Image 1 (cartoon, rainbow, N blue to C red):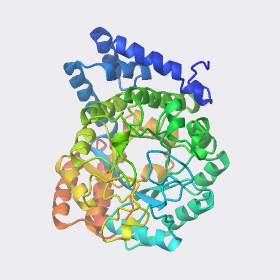
Image 2 (image 1 turned 180 degrees about the horizontal axis):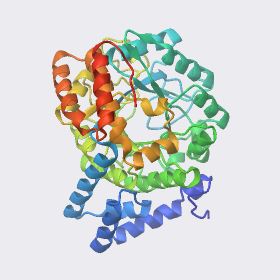
Image 3 (image 1 turned 180 degrees about the vertical axis):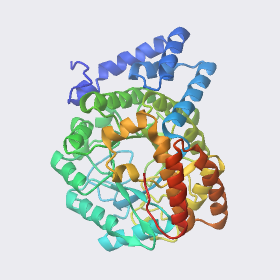
Length: 473
């Protein structure tokens, strides 16, 4: 039996099944131990995070007053680390060819009635121009695993094409990559291509379930998949993004595994996950989420989001358009710091007049336009940010984390958010959105702590009105 060791590079040792089982038993035993829960909450207030075991006790706790305390603390930590900024992005699906047999994804190899499609470089250009015309500056590219149709060379060519397109005032300034686990050498190539974050969802940390859910294809190899982030970091990628697909396995197990993975990255590489995503299983072409009997309700989902924020305060938290406007509004308050807008989860979907359903990876619940999402965020008190400055200034990995952990974000990310929002308002917003946005910028300028930074930001905002683009701190 493998002994639990967060510094180990072996999946079975840093995600130890026995350690998770013991953690869940400990959490269950202590879920009403209010003295211990208060002690954990006191520790959490220091903003330095919690261990997977401490956070699991909070997740097991059903005391309404304590849950309310957790929510308030999550809001406070989110405010301290990220302010009221919400980073905007969109997914871009390059290809749905896939050789895996994943039971929860319609791209699985046995699905013979889904049309298979792979974008040509011209089609990539068309999709990117459509995204730039909405106002997007940050993309997450997605592709099925297929060495023949989607080799690493194809992915690299697409990244190159995306970065090369300058249409009107549009530019994609950061490309995050969500592709299957690969080799150190391929991660090096992605790093050289200038990617932002490498994202890979674990789907489930429960090895037995994982093997059943991935019966065929290269993804069946649990260890290779789970150790991917270590290879990515070895290949020079500073920023990696974790995530599980909630609903496949018992949520308490997944929660503990996810936090153990974050602890492992911190212990073995000195830098934790840049982002954590929290997707839930959704309906798709031949996928019925009800077949997976571990679905979680909205309240449990909100609690998980709040506790991830408390346990890993520095991480960016991502929520996609899988979730409804109502759910997104709830979890943004509790810790989410990045959301997608106007997403199309099909290959070639952005150039279609109406959203195509036949090649979607999952049902989209929030179907609003980017402008509607931007306006909604501002109306509920957030700054939609299109900023990519840290990545382009080399503030990645531990350099970003130290900036985040030291609370310097208000002098850096806050003005960057206002300047990129101003670009959006000038170039893409409807009149109503622009009016709300101008008022918001005016009132948020005073929240920049350093006077000198505030003055430079004001000057840059004027220059953006004159047609100059791309300022950053």
